[in-house]
Image 1 (cartoon, rainbow, N blue to C red):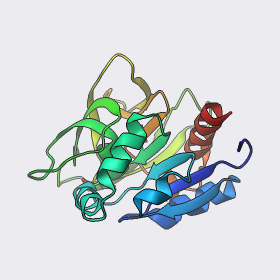
Image 2: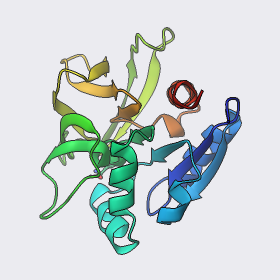
Image 3: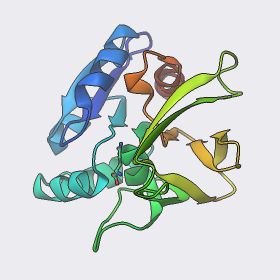
Image 4: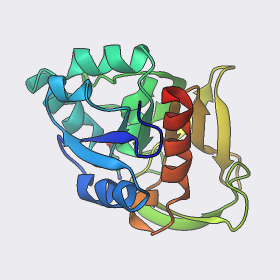
Length: 200
Ligand code: GLN
């Protein structure tokens, strides 16, 4: 049993894998890149990084990861997705490229590139009640929004206009933004708490 140093995989098909590995390692987790289906059985939780969701989707199929990933998440493997990772964890997607699929797990509809091409990226300070003060400095890069969420989904943060940008459902956490690039490790720490609660 692992209680103090959970083993966390970071899906390493494309995207900002190294940033997540660094944050997780600094928090005391044993963090490793995951590229093969067999590597999934060695981890207590999985982070899906930001990057390009349609590329990660395609590579997951090319690497034979997709079904194993879907099944592991459906069976309760804790997962945290940032930006593209949130898209991949959504059960439903709007504005994906033709044929784009997700792994699913979160009972949400996510709109990809929700801020349009005019606003590629922006930063904002977000109140996140589950983390307490201070506000989280959130970096959005061609970010998705949670447009609709089922009853089991807990919104964790919203923009001033009410748009949902962070959610939790059971052992799955998703953020539209990138805590791995700001030096604020509280979302990753929350995820590790969720993983520990599950493996205890
Ligand atoms: N727009 C990207 C996508 O569709 C996500 C961007 C990101 O992860 N920063 O996957």
